[in-house]
Image (cartoon, rainbow, N blue to C red; front, side, top):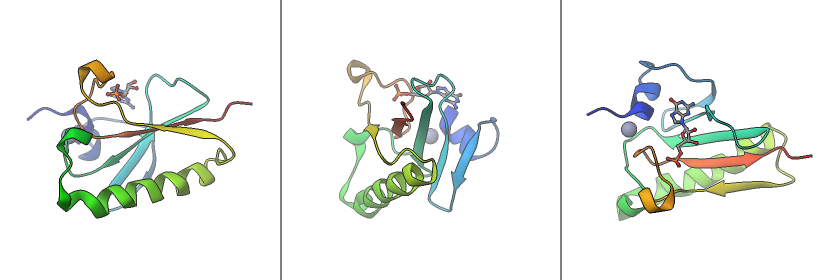
Length: 106
Ligand code: 5GP
Ligand code: ZN
């Protein structure tokens, strides 16, 4: 299976990683839409929100708590956007679940 985000997780492809633990990785978007544009991913390969199951409940909860923590660490917690693109019609290009954290506007 070829997945560019799994390749980044496995360190087969470079990325500007800002945070990593056993369950998640956070790196800078290659084409940032704002001064701060990060992608937060579970390391386990889930395709999209449409592919979430009951077993992912804790993972998804932890992903939002991580977003809050990263926003604070990055100094953008006074205002930011969290976005999931779902499916091609929803603008999803990479089929590995990821949460966009976008902010840093003056
Ligand atoms: P999607 O539209 O699937 O939610 O967004 C995928 C995001 O991943 C896009 O904003 C795109 O710029 C970013 N992206 C795609 N390929 C790479 C890559 O190889 N490295 C990094 N850092 N970001 C990527
Ligand atoms: Zn993947």
